[in-house]
Image 1 (tube, rainbow, N blue to C red):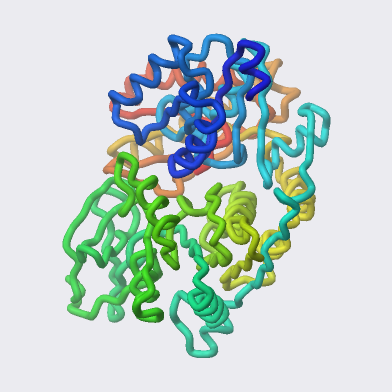
Image 2: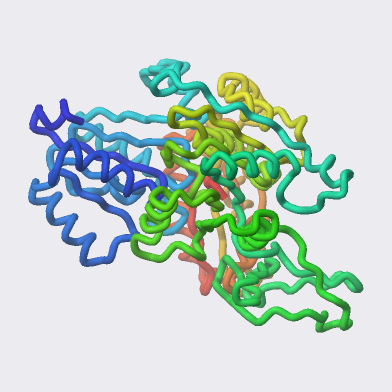
Length: 501
């Protein structure tokens, strides 16, 4: 960045989470003073506009921000850095749908600027492009200041259940937390699910309270004793008795609220700081909590993926992953990659100072090769296994998955429209000469991972083939044609490439 500034150019640094911007701003302001601007959605609109004007006027030549900062109005861009480039947060799942990495490539090509993708666990596609010579590839084989990686223990939660421990904290993690409390050192616990219980369940008839607007069970929040939908925001009071048969409602699953209560019971008097979207405010809430954790030397920080990435606290010597399986067994081709990256990132939060770090990974499948590779911090072993599987299944980088999502309030109309779209695409792929050599597959329709969100049903049709101008033209043409048919009135459609959900 200093070289870019010396050459009269500007630089943009992207980070995956708003919670990482305070530490970055503090470090960069110490180097570059008032030349640093910050852009992210957590800032008040007036503050964002002031920063945007400073950048456009050339008063700020270094921009630090999240995904949307890739559009910063930097006139003479010389360098664009994407830190933790593998993170899903760089992909926008709402309109306009874009990946910050793709926009960054386009902007760097426009300005003849350098694009630098940084990661300890690179995106599998990026790593493949580096291996095949499409990207230049540089490695940092040692940790900063040659510090040792944390010692990692895999805790088998099946064995914990056999031993009579049904709580969220394994005996191994409990012992390590107790040791850290005695030493005056800090710990970070990671669980990627907020709320108290994943859902309520009637033990008599099996009834589960569902969101009336979405096809998902509602999450129980003990702080206000309410059931909440994390998709549409619907909320209603929780009940102890089943409305159908009068049976007692049981709490199934664990969220950060429940773990916080467990920690208070296990370690009375020890302060616990919870950090998730329920405790982080819209503006600077993350900054306040992280400063409190560091300055007050709070023994335990418990949080969702907000705490998993990029945080650098010298006194943190222990990291605990409470449910390593949560992201591993979901219906997405990137689930193994996402799990490996998340585990590696959160384990890396321990031992960043002079003291040796430790990490405990709690799992019900300790033999899983993804979890074992993450525990060993062996990215190369994970990559070799994953790229072999993707080649067999025609997943990126060997093909692209273009998805058409049809949405509407009437499920039967949505399914009919999706079937008609599938048939039309199949006909076009078979008949058009330019598409025949591409070995395109048309799949579907199939329901989205959550079929109904906010009273709208979602069904998908997939095109599998290597992205090229001819295939993208086909996608654009059928998006436009969808709205020309009167039978599709009241329905919507959008397309995405390699969607993350």
